Every structure is written in structure tokens, then in C-alpha cells.
Length: 370
Picture 1 (cartoon, rainbow, N blue to C red):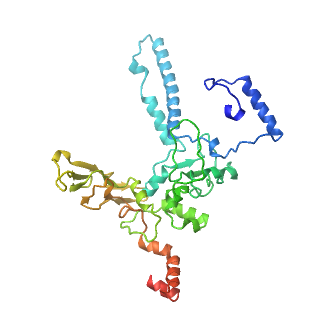
Picture 2 (cartoon, rainbow, N blue to C red; picture 1 turned 120 degrees about the vertical axis):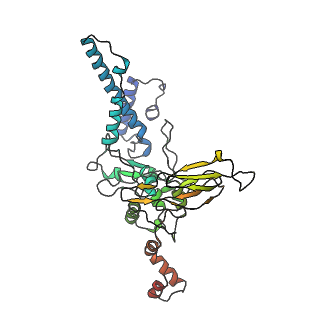
Picture 3 (cartoon, helix red, strand yellow; picture 1 turned 90 degrees about the vertical axis):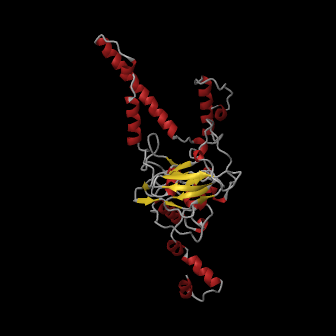
């Protein structure tokens, strides 16, 4: 308020003063005569993200109010019957448990984690929504709110959003964007990027040549990746963007070795890794230093079916990022499509390349070579 109304009131003063009212009225009069500028309500600096911690804090306050009413009722009943209540009878965890169970089960923004494929698990946890209690609705939100704002550059993906009535109301954070833990409101200057793909989210960054695609088709392909069911045997892609490996490592579907070692035992739930001595390379250490790597499960249950994890190799390196178990839809620690799907998607580019390099005389010959 000091910055907006040009005041110098101390920060420890949390009460509304007559000086504040007069300054606000003077500012509104100035806006009437085109003195000053209106705030852009769609700018990110004028918005605040309500995190899960804020929602849980509100539910905790609601649980305390309910607990207070229960304690008051218990004390009144004990006085009426001339009894002495015990602390165990006054305060119970039932009220707190019931409140949180109702929140996770009935809240409009409470959803089950989408585990259709590993990529979906990453994106589902980085969603931003205008909907919910205290927010907007799909029928009342205007076009200006749904539209892309310049302050979204490098922070919110301009491509990935819901389709239908909620278009523009549900988005995703960009790759390198994160929610700060600082209590102060701050929006950095968005005129430079760490990477070229920083403007997009994870699924859109896996689409090759996305800058040459139509925006509607890019949105459709981004949502189609969310619906892709993991294949029993993935194959390496033909054209990639370079972020496939990092997406697979961050998906949580891989068991990664933290130390150099040799796999000595495996079963459906456990991988036993004998850690190697750094001084004498290749010699296992004592049995007490064997490390057990727990898999998430033998069978991961998704919305569309079940898929098994397979063991990639018996030997792991000392890089600290060696993959010893590969999850669904991952082959050689990359998120991939089958070779046939990739050829079908990029067949036009391959045919043009063969004809341009004089490796094929016409389209028919190029298709036969493919």
C-alpha cells in the first residue's frame, strides 16, 4: 500500500488509518482525470498462487473451530451431570481426521495422481488452476483471463491447457519455473531464458519442431501424450529434443544407483546391490554394506491398465545416476514412442529429405526406402 499510494507508514502498523483512505480517494480522483495508470489485473505480480499448504492451513483452522465446539459441548455436558472430564475425553483426533478426510475426498481441487504414464505424473503435479473455491468458473470467466499474458513468458506454458469450457483456466508451469518459498511478492524481469525450451512445459518440450506447428495441433499433441498408454517394449525415437533423458530421470519410475556396485540378487520387490570398494575397484565390501533398493512395486496400477517394470542390467557405473531399473514406457532411460509411430509422424520430413538429397526420384520410391 505504501508503494502504490506513495506513503511512508511504518511496516509494523497493520491498521487502516484515515491517511490511507484519503490517499486512496486522491488516487481514484487522479485516475478519473487520466492521472496515473490502472493496475493490470491479469499480470502475475497482482496474483498469488494458493498452494497446498495454504489449503491445509485453512482446513486446520476449520478443524480447530470444530474442536473448540466439541470441547465446549463436552464441558457443558460434564457440568450438567456433575462430572469431571479428563483431557482424553475433551480433545480427540477424530475432528482433525474427519476434516482432512473430507478435504481430500470432497474438495473440488483434490484429485488422484494421474499415473497413466511416467510423464503424466510429472505434469500433473505442476498444474495451475483458476477454478475451485474462491476462484472462477468455466461459465463466468472472460476471454481476457483465459488469454496469454506477457508476464506468463518463461513462467507459465502458453501451449498446454485444458480443452473445452476450461480452456485457459488450467495451465502448467514452465520447465524451470518454480513456486518460491519467500513470503515476499516478486516477479523477475522476463526478458531472458535459461534455455530455449524454458518457455514450455515438459510435454510440449518433447515435441520436435514445435515452433513450426500450429498452436491447436501443438495443444492436441501435448494432451495426447497424457493419454498414451505405456508400451510393452519401447523403441528409441528417430527425432528428439534432447530433454527425454531428463524427463525420464525426474519421472520417479526409475530406480537409480547412488553408488558403484554389482547386482547380486533380485526379486519382484527388492534389488540387492553389493557396493564396491573405491580403493580396490571391483571388490565387494563387507556384507553389512549391501544396500537394498526398493522398487515402487512389481506392478504399477494405472487408470488404463497395468504394466511391469523390467531389469535393465546387472552392472551399474559409479556416475551416481546409473539406471538399474527402467519403468513403464521407458527404454534406455528415455520417454519414447514406438518406431512405427515416429515414422508415421515424421514421414513427410523423411520423404522430403530423401528427395532433396537425390536418394529417391519420387514419393513412391521414398516410401519404399522407408
